[in-house]
Length: 154
Image (cartoon, rainbow, N blue to C red):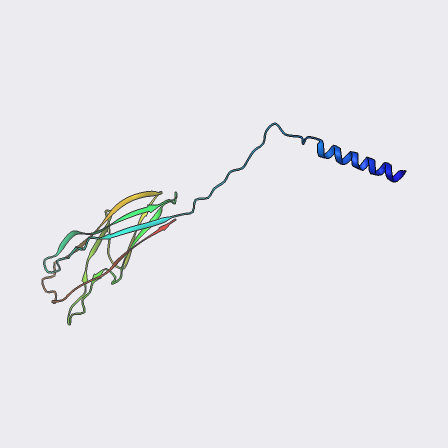
């Protein structure tokens, strides 16, 4: 008899739990979150300009750069020369020809220089130009260097 009474009590309790409505609060909340990764890019366009070494070239537009960086603290653009700021030739007797680069109004020479931005920028176009002093005694031949433009968030 005790077994039957216990079984009936357990069944009644189970029925009550199944059929009883769940208690609900009057409000609730859902936490939302998202993440934006840092993204800094440059798109470099080479203007295909030719520099006049014999009579000199002043502020010749050699290219442009479109900067995009979503770092709120800003970013740095670095302009680096493969030949330490000189045009070099493989011609016998040729001497390297120094030049000055201007990036968005900032002048630099030598191996590299940097331009610092204080905040995020999107689709900012910056011009790159080069000034070569006249060298009437330059040896015949092709002279070249490569500028590499890099961007890095802070």
